[in-house]
Image 1 (cartoon, rainbow, N blue to C red):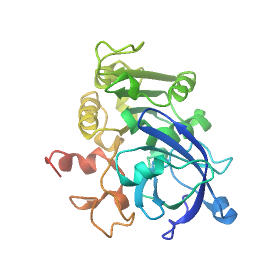
Image 2: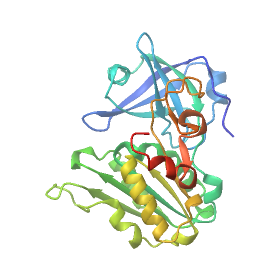
Image 3: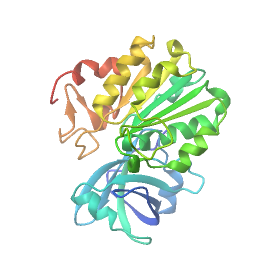
Image 4: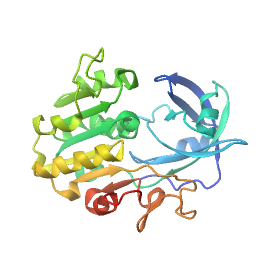
Length: 279
């Protein structure tokens, strides 16, 4: 069970900063209030609102793979005013956290079944805690396939994680790059080309998709063609989430508010909306 979201920013300090690529970094954060730190819980796939004092707030997925040390990891791409400000933080600096928010991955539905995880670029961050949940209770899940695609070879983050996941029992890892001439030891094509090659029972599997919407839609359609039910395919959407409660309306898509009703949706819920250009 996840804790009740905090509407007032909780004070957290940076305990470690990791550069993942030229524009992507991870902040490891510790809540200063011990009571809040001990009571904080989240579900894989949820997010926090990360507040930079005097600048603004941004929704960032929680990518922690465990809470034994009570640290919260957030992997961030520096693309706007808030994220570029967060990029400048160093160990000992403080920021605010509100959360956790949203609906996470359907880990209960996945128990006892094969699991396929398809991600693109930074989309591999929101699935870290889901894969960690499988690793912690490995006997509760079937085979696991992890497919990650990037546009450029330098865009791959978490190489150590992918190596560790490849070593997990009953697990396949496929890494793809769009650059045909990339200095890249793995595949130079798209992840969708490999979905029918996995050693999985797709007719009774669950899929977790995260990345560019075009990639997710293409992957969902391929998985359906391979016999997977639309209710077993789940996508994590990204929109302009400014409040976390569905009040401001910035993240609305059709009848849904991504921050409140998502960010994880089943393909059955969202497929028609994703077919509308610009929605």
